[in-house]
Image (cartoon, rainbow, N blue to C red; front, side, top):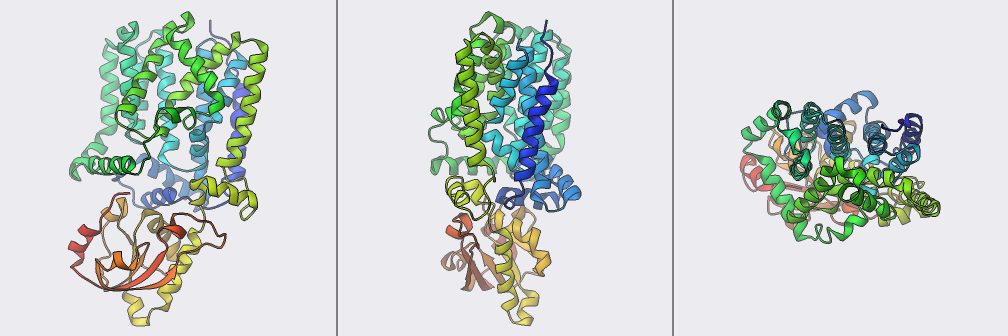
Length: 491
């Protein structure tokens, strides 16, 4: 018999987290990735080069309800991570954990570095994490009840996940391997499996049709990004970083106990498929040279099992683990969320360590700097001038804030911006951001430096450090249709 669900406690913990996110998520500005999602939200389609359509659709809802408020748009990401906490507590209960175990699971999940950033930043990671954890809970319910009809729910969740991020396919494959490796495979031999597959397939059909019409851009994009990540070392240390990134280091005793619970303890026999599913998915990511944070959705089911097993720990071990979680919570909130007042010493220490927070600084100022260059052009030239951004952060900022400054439509050479095409006016004078003079002169006959990209807080980020140029270029070297093909880059 399952213990009672500690719903009140779990909701209180989730509400506390939501309140902390709500009060801090508006401290700085949008992240460059968020600016890309917001731009796509204004140009909704069934799919985009870098991701499927569900996250931009949620961003569109955020813009409709809250305008361009960072805290408002990020509310949905924070809610998704509060949902992950609830699911972790519910899985602990499913595995025999009482109130303490359910609370431990929820808190252990809440201090995950990836999960915490997913509650702060509006990205597909936020929703991918929720769908994957929801899938693990659905599979656990199926294993506990022995009812194959849960495969229908699994089909819906997989469909939502694949419309959010393609890595749901890895999670699905790993859990399927776990089911096949255990006696639970019998649950798959039913008509409900075919029905679940049909549901997921129907939900993904618009994405597949879009990809087919666009020559399977997702494959080209993914290959380019994977090659870049390997080249610059982002995939290095994948296995040892599992102790630091997807789950907090101080929760390692809990999730390791959870893996042992699934694979070795008698109480975990009925849910053993989840343990093998974790190992199978981890192996898939290892062999494919994935980035360390991709595995974050795997750890809540381990933390839930570890929390259920922790009920048998000696009292002093339990108290030590709770103290460790308190330390983890303070450390991750202080370093990974925008709690520090902008401009303070704490702020500068945090942004020097956390590049994501550094990328939330200076975007409105950047647009103002571009606007000053635009206003300085002679009147007749200004009327026909174009605007070209070299990365999606710049393009997203100019798309969001540029109209208020009277700037023309921005052309972006990356991802969705590139796919939306160039300015139909085919401008002869173009303000170019983020390229050096030498790089820009490969595309234009003459380019001159006009301003440096800076921010008033003195934060060193990608814009102020690497992409710090604002140029005025004249005379495209080729017709725009041909030039546009040459300008494309995936990022």
